[in-house]
Length: 90
Image 1 (cartoon, one colour):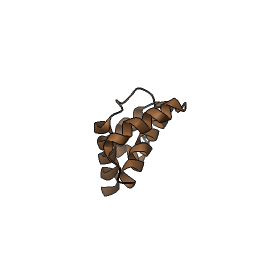
Image 2: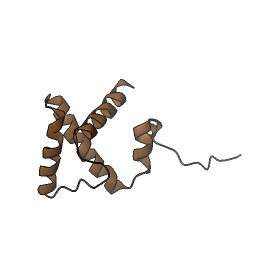
Image 3: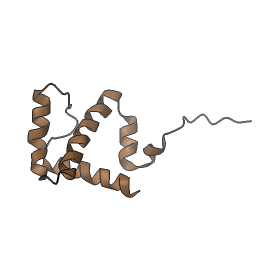
């Protein structure tokens, strides 16, 4: 009997954002999750995307590590929101 030597991959890793997220270190995942949470808040509260940068900068000022993986701007906010929408649509 042959055993499958390929480690099992979580279901969320089948999506494009999930695949890249799956390969990251835990610290990077936490940092990006925080940025996605900020983008989600902006979308939920129907705020303009250009509020993403000042909110993220304020979080950094409070000592929240957001990392340097992504550029913090309104375009990145839109990409995060698009990714969240894609996940919910699937």
